[in-house]
Amino acid sequence: EVTGDLRAVKAVLITHYHADHAGGAQRAAGALFSVLGSERTVAALLAADEEATSLARARRAGVYPDDYRLVACPSARAVHGPVGVGSLLFDVRPAPGHCDGHIVVELHEPGGVSLFTGDVVFPGGTVSVQPLPDCRLSDYADTVARLAERTVDAIFPGHGPVELDA
Image (cartoon, rainbow, N blue to C red; front, side, top):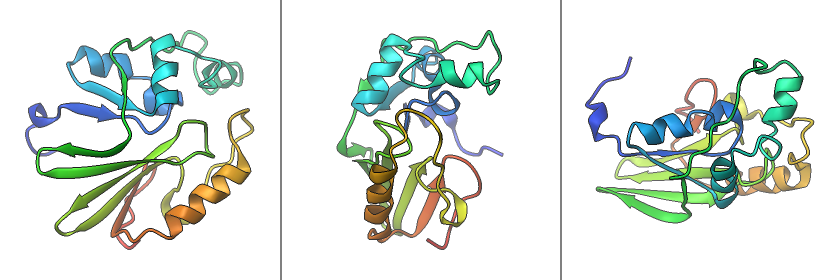
């Protein structure tokens, strides 16, 4: 259940360009949200590049219906480093491996640090290595090792339950 005033939401930050995360970018922009992501994700969204995002491959494999298409999002823009939103500080960090251009986001609050991992780390510390051209195992290992050094209080993966005991 969603609580609070959704009119306070101003932006959508997309961790990576796979369709299950970025497929609704143009609809979000149409609802007047700013659409943000890494330079690679934004480039893929601007061009609706179904090859770079592996959507064409996933559609051929039956993961998506034959008529599913990525719609270009011309208003998407790249973001990196620290980003302030109101009183909140988000730190956008590169996290390659699961796919090119993947990012993770740390939210620094007075009560601690939350890490939004997209598809880099899932509940229980599992990872998703896929047979895709841009899934790079050595980059993935480096990313996971860097994240393991971070002190965080909660992990919010792109799929599955929140980890409150990081």
